[in-house]
Image 1 (cartoon, rainbow, N blue to C red):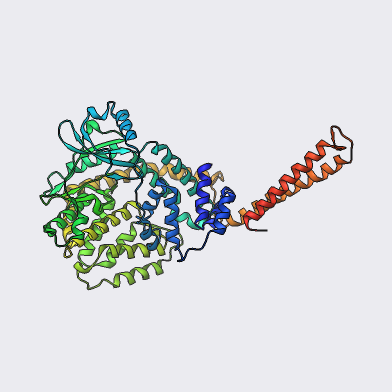
Image 2: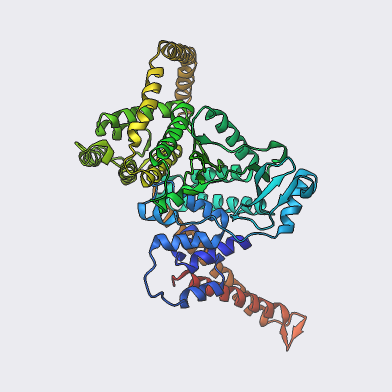
Length: 549
């Protein structure tokens, strides 16, 4: 309840009192928060709605920052100005004390740090909302990076996730126009993602798996995991010496083989996507290093995306359509992956697609930016209430980030041209005799299962029709506002009747001489008046706070 009140006051502070009222949470706002909201001075420059939302998320702490970062990957759900603002959310926090680091290591590994490490830096070189990172050296001589989870962060995050889930349910129940965006599903996705981030052994597993997948990839390094010293709350990984790729972006005169580095990064991600369906979902300059030998090292494999076989096939169709500049086919394939609402205007949808596609006809591939195409298609999807799978949107964002990074390193890089061989190889495998035979067998099995179950299914339907048990349900929409108003009014009327009854009953008692007496009047009558007065004052305050008299 304390956290709910804190959330309500922060929302009110940043001007979202109307949202609290829609969710039925206005009663959680404290009087101090209400006064602060009313009398807070107007800033010299108007603050945009996306910025105010970002400020709310920052004030609410790490779980809500993670939620904003998740929303920044969903341009199909929210407008570009919101996603751009949410990308500014930094996962930073003040470091926690060194003695707590030592206690956590001893608790998790069962022995004091001095028995495991030959040296251990007391100051972290990175501190985030869930963990902080120290550099160390093992007794065996290897230089490592030690990632230590923040103390008591897991119960705090779990509590916030439960509150977010409650809020999402309120949104779906009280704000019908937002249901199609599946708020509960978004929070469940966030919960799954954050739960995995809290378990460092999963990050270690991801890193080991990718190291095996990319073992034969030349010019690429995936850091080694030291499993003997890794737990759910501790991650010990090989230290990679190198400079962030951001350094080479900011220093264009630095002597490196830029074409080779850009090509290596793109091919590495294409291999992850098309061959394994398992890819790094958070590529940014801080996660990519260039070693003194000119090799590329990718670190921090905590956030990974997964693609099923069917989605990979559709991606191949999109990529092949792009290589042939069949933008109409590419856009239709892309949108066909999404979920359509019942209110979709197909004519308007096709018109928007054709306008989008027309902009790129005749333009050479090297001048086409994948991020721009993805953003425009996402805009068309959002405008027409088409919801795309989160893993696809995450993939598009990752590819857009990779394209942005590599083009800053080497402007002439062509990501579509480099992806062609992977798409063609997957296309060839799809139509190989072995794969066609396998799919045919699966289809026959599915069809035979359907034919076996069909008579029983039809029999059940007919039986329900005969027994009159078939029900037709009607959906009433946009009645929640009326129901809330009627509910509020009925509660106020009920309280008014109770107060009136207390006043009348107390007045009747006051005319009697029922003992005990106080100043010559029955105490029961006096208490009745006091109770009625308290209820009356509470009702008046409640009406004033609602803003509707």
